[in-house]
Image (cartoon, rainbow, N blue to C red; front, side, top):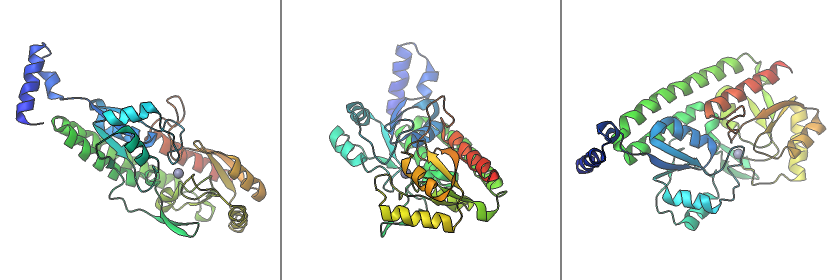
Length: 299
Ligand SMILES: [Zn+2]
């Protein structure tokens, strides 16, 4: 904020009798985030200075999404908009043109060392960066920078929140390392619905197999499924998990053909509702680590 507008802000506050403390906290930013995991991290960094609207809701699939007129309105009125990027939100561009939003979204995954995968003979970037808290620290830095630019009067708070939350992410990383390390390496193999946990696997040495690729938009062919069943048998994968935001039928079919046992549910790309087990990113990550470790202990 420029000096003149701070002065005007002070005068306005004084005029309506609100005093000086309110003027120090310049404004509440209206922000929009593409999906719940990102919305929570924006809230952690923004604190009381931001309202955050998540476009995709709790338990929703961030790859495939039908925005409503309300979503378009929220986007158009947003002070700052955040997307993860790397091909996750294929629907976002269309929403931008439909809404008349003229801003430029902040792509929070910028700067992350991404991993690629072979998907139907093509090399694709894995967009599920948040399943490693090490990557989320880069989200936090990008979010803090964008909020500071939009509301410089509250920059010190954004910096402090970002530092505190980054420390929490370090703790989550250390927790996952300590828990997963106790599982013998050859038993760290899991079947899930789609390839959403590659960064978790890279960080903690767990192999995840799935009938779908990195996006739920693709469909698995009968040949893909047959090949996966052979692979699961050959690698002796004994566990499978459902995903809260995905159709369980395909993973059930594969598990039946291989004898893999259910481990429960993982929250890979959508938070739960407030009263569920994963209403924040930190709770979601910890829940997944605990679900995996409990299931590994039983195999
Ligand atoms: Zn996904």
